Length: 575
Image (cartoon, rainbow, N blue to C red):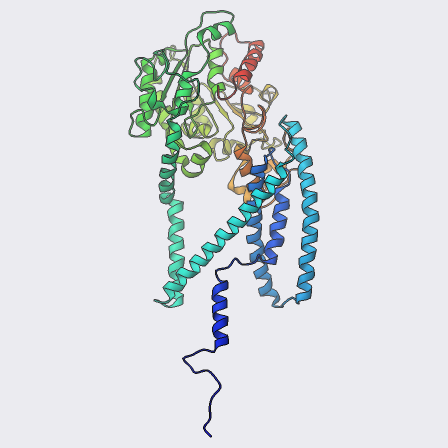
């Protein structure tokens, strides 16, 4: 009887094996369950995201923060779990695994309810401290829903990227040996990284973003009409057109105190109309330097170099200028002022700071040089006082014109910056080398000889009790301003402003946590101007104290300064 094999032939796999292969292939395209280690770490990061931070946040932004934190925690947990498995080399029994899962879910539910209760408590205290509206009851549902969407979406995105990389590596390995294919993938990853670091990819991204925000730049804010005065850019005889100024430029030249308001503030003394010059991205220049020269030419045409004060207002990304910075000088000098600004981007300030702060630096340098080249050749006894001002990214550009404190002293009559970003060079040098015993959020530098800081300006600018030479430089910065304190270093390093005694509007319970504090402060940046004056990134009334200390006109009194505080409070930062 011939022998008949019951084993499958070499070329035809068994049916059972075929079914297993098909099942595995099918499962590759199904969502993978979330790993236990990742779940535990994600839960811890969720709890940390609910801990006290600088500013009260609304439901949506809290949900974004919690979802991103959970996704980041999940990734950390998955990596740690794999590392532990490699070290232990021991499988957990199904019974033990079930008990662990149930325990984690029970602890997670109880802990999350407790953290939400604490979240409600510190949010209430912070909102009372900052006179902000209470957190809405329905907000918790929104927070949970948004957090879930971001967590699921980010984890899914990372999984797709991992699978795509594996798929590409698999295709390449069919042509070349696996070791070579792995090297090819690694080289491509390094090349992409270098492109981003060198800015090539960033410039392409920024160009696309600029185009998308350009449409907003064409809009005009309600109530902003073309000026009828030749003393304003876009008005009669101006070298630039009204339409070319951009949304923020049109707002700048269309607003400001009237001659009647200035005269009334100054005891009915006859006032003159302030000069406001500006150039937008569409005003005719091919480069930032040409735009700056065009703006200064329009300033000169209007007679700006014949005024008592010329102020160089370095702008934020979109070309915005804090109205209180400008109006305060105009009220103080009864209109005998000239202010010039230049737009260099369509992007919002925070986005411009992240992807292309180089343009802000170039704009600050070009704008100052265009004014200074004319100003320095005027007779010293008759030329106007020269000051520089800017808020947020505007302060970054304004600093670029000097480089250090010595240049501030020799090339200007005063400088005022509000809400400076953590990346500002002069700010960083001064803060890092502050006098011993002074906190990072309110430093003293070289006994306050040139530069001083104010969080609550009426009392802070008088410290220390030592001579304050002229010219003077002032930084206004709130302890709760995330624009000032956000930095990539927050990811792994505890900052001094959380290591030292807390600022006046920062809760004592605020703590630093790796990764999470970085995300918290980043989320705070999105709501930094939604709090009242004196907190966050809102700078209005204290500007009166700053200008009064830097460059007071003859006869200016503390009572005048207090009246100006009241006027600015009615104007706000946007006019």
